[in-house]
Amino acid sequence: NIIRVARLCRLVRLMRVFRLVAGFAELRRLVQMMAGCFKTLFWSSLLLCLVMTIWSVIAVELINPYIQDMDAQGAWKDCDRCRRAFASTFMANLTLMQTVVAGDSWGLIAVPVIEKHPEVALIFIGSLMTLVFGVLNLIVAV
Image (cartoon, rainbow, N blue to C red):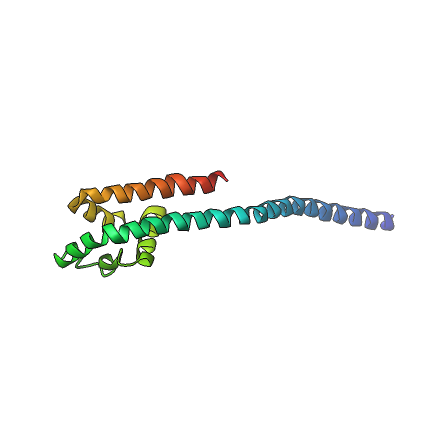
């Protein structure tokens, strides 16, 4: 009788391990699907960087002179980074990532420039539309 109880306990342990392995099969399948998406995510991220860099070059050429004029007038006394937000393509990429993709600090840089020079809104709205509603939604759809 004791041997039968021991065998029954072993069988119960084996069933618990079997259930655990069955759960890992689903986990393994999820990890495999995620690994299969990395190639697509890489190319999508590259597309995002390319489009953002195009908008950054446009912003450096068209927005930076306005920002420098506003800085000379004392628009950003409290913000050290604001006067150099669009000074280079790298800084413009960082600023667009911060404002357009992350949605952070619209009121710090974009809104004061748009209030002073409304035509700049076309650049911010264009970058918002193509990056957020275009590329990022494409990434989510894939």
